[in-house]
Length: 544
Image 1 (cartoon, rainbow, N blue to C red):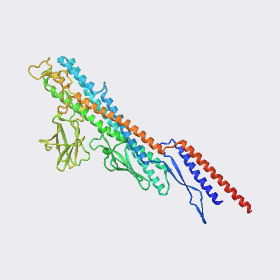
Image 2: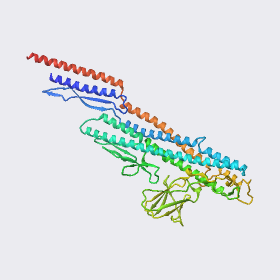
Image 3: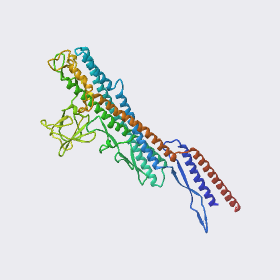
Image 4: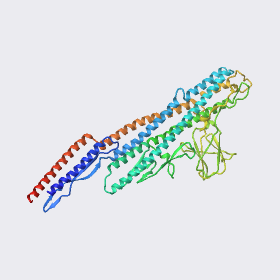
């Protein structure tokens, strides 16, 4: 009877825990990231009575969570990809709308400026027509400045996004490290921390919404987390802290580094953070450089042509537009005292790209900062023999140490600084520069109007209008590609989530059936205990 009572009590204990597990599943049916838990029952070690082997009841051997590592990994990966494409599309759409605006875009202002040149050419002595030309020129310059200011504002927003994302990543890294500590302690004591594992998976999924990470499970149950090119974000119970730093050349450009270690911005991908940085590197910076190139070469072309005419007073035309000089940026890591002066030697050879000039053991090296291509240099950097390449010249003063660097963006300040240099309408050089020039002469004005169809960009490769359309087209193409990518990754994410839920999700109908099944087993065990107790009492009474 004691064996009977023991078996009954083991059943009561086992099915009570099974009922607790089922109720736990039901309670968390709508909890994000929760994995359904299942009980595993096994018979207890039987007792040997002579030649007989008698069973001793049931025991709860384990409580496992329904889990598919492949499905979870796929969900994390597609989450990172979807959030990157979604962020890239949202930011690129803003750029696309800004540049293609039919009222505030660059193309309308450029067309009005050309129209006013044509109008002034029909009556070159009219001061009213000349004032209209100056007004439309100022409007065009203001449009360049306004768009560049918008770009600067978006860049500042990206900086804020990076800062907020880094704080979120650090918070999640600490949470994962704390969970690792508790999980490894529980595993070491022989436990199965199912709910803690779900919490850690949820934190990893949230982390992948911000940035793509890879993971490696350790023998003690902890999970190592890596970011970028394999840099450790979490090792066991120790999180590594990310921090926001400034670019070594540009203090207005935020970068990401490990605390006390190197910069990892170039290896960040996936998630909203990866999308923001991809937008900045692949859309914003190239568009801003192209905008500067358009402003620079428009101003250069008009100034060059304007200088070939004479104004109403018979004077040779001066600059029609003004633009800022090139200001090279010094790396904060430089240890030498060298300074760099950069001047434009051929405006129409400029490309709009940025360049890094670096002092090596064998001399100065120039490389394109966009495609990392090494550019051939001539000269030695002295005032008598400047370093020259890509339409600009460089004079080095002072002593440069090995690995000292300078960033050169020849057209970087052009869009924000371009302005009409003439205030007196009589100063517009509409006439030719010869003896036959007079107040009604419009030869130079017609030549300036002809710049609309002249290929002046980058050594005659395209017109200004072509350059504007190329800039718009690239942004539009990126926007469309990101839109398609976001839709595609959204579908894959929905499929991955459904696949994970098929394995780990709670089915309330199934849990209701389990609840009834375990309840009946519990009640039956209770009945067995009652019978065992009754038999025991009968035996006691028989010997009383």
